[in-house]
Image (cartoon, rainbow, N blue to C red; front, side, top):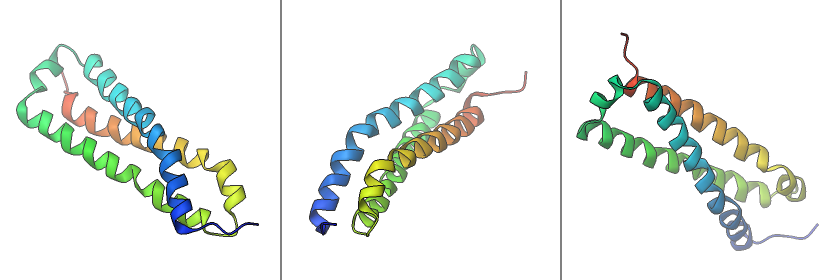
Amino acid sequence: MTDTSPRAALTDAIRYWEPRRIVYNLVLLVVVGVVFLAHLPASRSDVTFGSLQLLFVLAVLANIAYCAAHVVDVIAQLSAFRSVWIRFRWILLLTGIAFGGVLANFFAQGIFAHAT
């Protein structure tokens, strides 16, 4: 086992997580887009300045939540389980994408779905 410095662990975490943030955001965008399209034409009337502001705030909060993976990653890399963590951190990625997708669906349904 080689000791990893905090700087090296943080650099590795950023190198791993930041390119994958694009996939995370695309999944959330697709989920919101599908909900919007599924509720057309009524969902068009829900596109207001206020709803766009809400979607923007939710997107920022989703990306702040994504940063939690960095903290978990750095801590795991500084532990004795670094080699195992590196091989299996993709599970945290998939779990986070799934959780974010479910939350995006929940909020998009609240914004765009109406009882007709």
